[in-house]
Length: 614
Image (cartoon, rainbow, N blue to C red):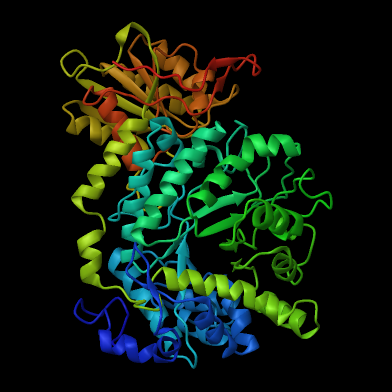
C-alpha cells in the first residue's frame, strides 16, 4: 500500500480498489454474500450471521480492543512529530497510531485538534488512510471507526477550510428543521470525505438552566419539543450523508450548574420531570434511527437510586435506554478521562462497570493499558462473560458495516477537494447563521446602521480564544466584515474583564468614530464588561451590543439601545451578525431560551420566541 503520510501525492493517497480488497480479504470473505445495500452510502450491510462468524474468529484480546475508542497524538499514523511521539509514549505506551492499533486492536480512534490530528483536510484524510492501512494489515484486521466532536459552534475539532456551521443554539433560534437537516447533511459529507464516520453530535440536552457551565449554547434550546424536532432533523441529515450521528448526553445534561469535566453533577429532576423535559429529544433521536447515543457522567437519583453516574448505571442504560426507549444501537461513553465518571470508582473499575451497565464503546480512558487490562481480567475472572462482549462488538460491527467501512474504508485527496469547504457549503452555513441571528433590542430604529450617517465604526469587546479552525479574534472578524460591507471599521480588543485603563482607551477611541459595536461574553452583574458598555453609552455615540455567547447578557445591559445575539463567536455567526447590523439581511431569529430579569430571575425579561426584525 502507498505511503499515507502528508507528503504523499494526490494520486497515491487513496489505495487502489484491488489493494483494498486484498487488505480486507479476511473480512470480506466472511461478509461477501447476501448483504443488502445501505441507501445512504451504497455500502454492503451484512446480516448478523456473517458478523457473528467474524466475531467467532477473534481472540479475546481482539474483542476487548474493539470496545475502545482512543485518542492518539500526531498528524500521521506512522510518522508523527517527535513531540507527539513523546506524548504517545508517556500516555499510551506506543509511539504512533499504527502502533496503537497493533498493540491494543482498538475499534475506534477519536480525533482532536489539540492532539494535532486535524491540521488540514488533506492531512486528515491521509491520517485516516494510514490508520485504516495499519489496522487492516494485521491478522484478522478490521477497519477502524474514526470519530470526532464536530458539534459546530463552540465545539469543533476540524477547522477551516472545512465548512464551519453555526452552533446548536443559533440553529435553535432559526427554528428550521430544514436548516438542521442540511447542517447534518453537509457536515456529514465533509467528515466522511476526511475518513471520519462517527460524529459526536447533535447535543440532545435541553438547556433549562441558564447557569449551566458545560452545555449552554451547545443546546438547541430550552423547549423539549423544539429541541426534539431539530435533533431528529440533524440526525436525518447525518444519516443521509453516511456518517453516524450521536445524540448526547443521555439521560440529559441540561439542568446542572456543575461541569462533568471537573466534578460529578447531580440532576434532581423527578421521573415525571425527566419524561417531560429531558426524554423527548432522545426519544426523537431513536425514532429517527440514530446510530449512536453518548452517555452523561451525571447522577439522576430518580432514575437510579444507587446514585451511580449514568455512564455506569444499568437501570439507566439498560432499563430505560434499551428496554423502555427500545434502542438497540451503539452506546458510547462520554470521555472516561472526565472527573465526573472517576469520582466514585477507580479507573480500573469504570470500564468494567460501564460494560455491565450496557455500554458498547469505551471512549478515551485516561490510561488505556489500565482500562484494557481491567476488561480482559474481568472476563477471565467471570465478572464479564465473553458473550456480553460479543453483544457490544456485534453492534459496533453492524455500525461499521452500515457506514461502508467493510466495503471501502479509504478516502482520497480528490474526494476531499470535491466536497470539503465548497462554495455551496459555505454559502449554506452563512444562510443558516443568518436565520438564527436574533435582534432583542432596537430602540429608535438604531439598527441597521447607515453607511452614510455612521460610516466610521469602532468594534470593541471580548475576544475569547477562538473555537477550532476559526480565524478570530471575533472583534477583528466583526470589524473586517463591517469594512467589507462599506463601513470603515477598526477593532480594539478589550477582553472578558477589561481593566479601568482598557475601558478608558475604548472610550477615548469612541470619540473618533460615528458608532460603536461591542461584543459581550457572559456578562454578570459585577462584570467590568458592564462598566465598559455603560461608559461607552455615556459618550452619546450609538452603541450596538452583540452577545457572542449567551443571550442572557442583555439582562445586565439595560441601557443598550440595540442588542443582537449570535450565540457563538465563530466566524460564520459573527459575520452573520455584521450583515444584520449593516442591514444586508434582516434578523429573523427567535429566542430558543427565555432571558430572565437580572433583578428578578423568576420573571422573564424576554420569553422564548421573542425576536425583532426590520
